Image (cartoon, rainbow, N blue to C red; front, side, top):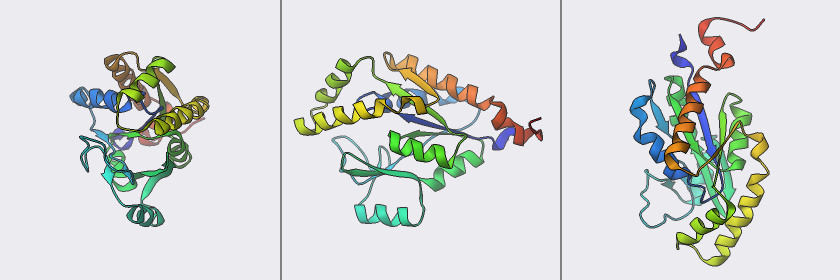
Length: 206
């Protein structure tokens, strides 16, 4: 009866917090999960960075194609970040959840708030860098963006920290393995949440 109680986990955090690295670590151990662990590949209008592959890191699309899909309500959430559009395709996520799996979303705070409005059962996780100095070091270490874009990302990070109170969990990424284990614990805890299980065991609240 509980197979349909899929878990939607949204992971946010400033650019440079290490979200992609932590998610890769989590996915590498997905055999520990009883149900499928699915990572939703977002669509974006930004150009790929060195080493990024279409359909793996992002679905790289034109702004026109992005806007057309948005007009058809094809995104679970979509937002503009640092001058580029990002969105989570709805169909694949809903298929995963219907099968009782766990869908992981790596999205920024605007998108996370949209998901929370559409799916109040979603678990929101904010991934924090070990320190502000380390965040700045990571952004500059990429050497993929000019200084003005780095300064803009740091300013956006300041704004994102204001949303932490809207999240369900905060995890500090001072160790990739530790952070991944903590998100794994969140997923297991969410599967046991009473509000999630009630509809599937035929019970109601008093």
